[in-house]
Figure 1 (cartoon, rainbow, N blue to C red):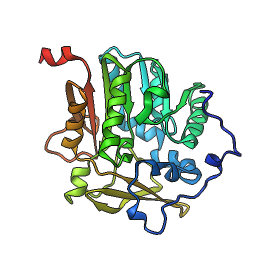
Figure 2: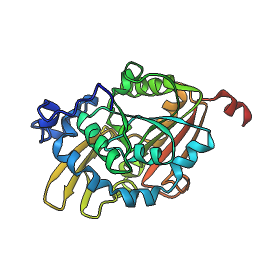
Figure 3: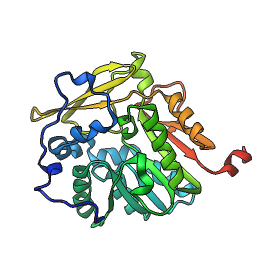
Figure 4: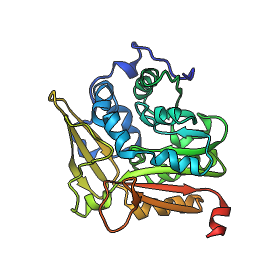
Length: 283
């Protein structure tokens, strides 16, 4: 565990148990608000929402195969959450650094790493917008999964984060970043229910408010607990455009792990963005 993360129950980060949205929840459209969203209650229940075995079955070897096909060895899991993908990558033999902006998530990831195969995860408390100041060295790959990128609400923050991802990658590195299919949600062709990412049977995750600048989701657990997350509804082509603007040379977009996104409506899009100029020249 990084020395920057102290799992101390007396810390204010770990005492917080209730979310804070103020008097007008749908007015909260700030990148830094995730710190008030990922608190004790929802972090404790996050693995119930994911359901690790079912999520692993749904994803299969998609991410492992993508990384191995590009010869990746050192990987930055930039949004590790409770550690699902970090543990999966460790099991597959990758040298993984696990970063997150939530100390509570990192504490849970540390425990999950030990429980899920005895992996001592290398954890870093990091802000994507200043990533090079938080993590050291270069990586063959950066993954930013779990719809995490949608917590950035300003154009500046999104561009800065992607530029930081780009800067920590080796010359031939790859970024894998995902997002909900917000196009379908905004256009009224989706119920917002995910079959691949949020697999828990005893959790209901539905949109509570949707407009062009906010997708607010409500998570209801079987014990009656209710939690909310505010996210920016990123459109697919907008994200691809940002990736190109930052400098990624080749971008493949997949839908729900199985095949390249086509006319069907996937739950999630996964963008695989290559930094290498050689990849572009070879097309």
